[in-house]
Image (cartoon, rainbow, N blue to C red; front, side, top):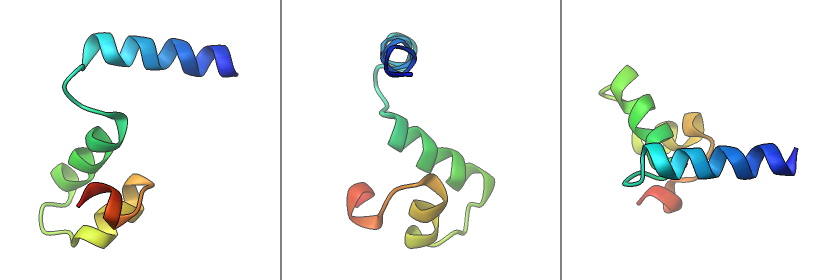
Length: 53
Protein backbone atom coordinates (compact mmCIF):
# COMPACT_ATOMS: atom_id res chain seq x y z
CA UNK A 1 0.00 0.00 0.00
CA UNK A 2 2.85 2.39 0.81
CA UNK A 3 4.29 1.90 -2.68
CA UNK A 4 0.92 2.56 -4.27
CA UNK A 5 0.55 5.81 -2.31
CA UNK A 6 4.08 6.87 -3.26
CA UNK A 7 3.35 6.17 -6.92
CA UNK A 8 0.09 8.09 -6.70
CA UNK A 9 1.82 11.09 -5.12
CA UNK A 10 4.49 11.09 -7.82
CA UNK A 11 1.91 10.92 -10.60
CA UNK A 12 -0.20 13.62 -8.92
CA UNK A 13 2.76 15.99 -8.71
CA UNK A 14 3.56 15.39 -12.37
CA UNK A 15 -0.02 15.95 -13.58
CA UNK A 16 -1.19 18.78 -11.30
CA UNK A 17 1.90 20.37 -9.73
CA UNK A 18 0.18 23.61 -8.75
CA UNK A 19 -2.42 21.98 -6.46
CA UNK A 20 -2.15 19.74 -3.44
CA UNK A 21 -4.58 16.86 -3.09
CA UNK A 22 -6.33 18.73 -0.26
CA UNK A 23 -6.71 21.88 -2.35
CA UNK A 24 -8.13 19.83 -5.21
CA UNK A 25 -10.61 18.10 -2.90
CA UNK A 26 -11.85 21.41 -1.51
CA UNK A 27 -12.18 22.96 -4.97
CA UNK A 28 -14.15 19.92 -6.15
CA UNK A 29 -16.56 20.25 -3.21
CA UNK A 30 -17.01 23.97 -3.90
CA UNK A 31 -17.60 23.28 -7.59
CA UNK A 32 -20.38 20.85 -6.70
CA UNK A 33 -21.87 23.06 -3.95
CA UNK A 34 -20.97 26.73 -4.67
CA UNK A 35 -22.75 28.22 -1.64
CA UNK A 36 -21.33 25.75 0.89
CA UNK A 37 -19.88 27.05 4.16
CA UNK A 38 -16.15 26.75 4.74
CA UNK A 39 -16.34 24.30 7.66
CA UNK A 40 -18.75 22.04 5.75
CA UNK A 41 -16.54 22.11 2.64
CA UNK A 42 -13.55 21.17 4.77
CA UNK A 43 -15.44 18.28 6.35
CA UNK A 44 -16.58 16.94 2.98
CA UNK A 45 -13.03 17.26 1.64
CA UNK A 46 -11.71 15.27 4.60
CA UNK A 47 -9.76 18.08 6.24
CA UNK A 48 -10.34 20.79 8.83
CA UNK A 49 -11.06 24.46 8.36
CA UNK A 50 -7.71 25.65 9.70
CA UNK A 51 -5.89 23.60 7.05
CA UNK A 52 -7.61 25.44 4.21
CA UNK A 53 -7.88 28.89 5.81
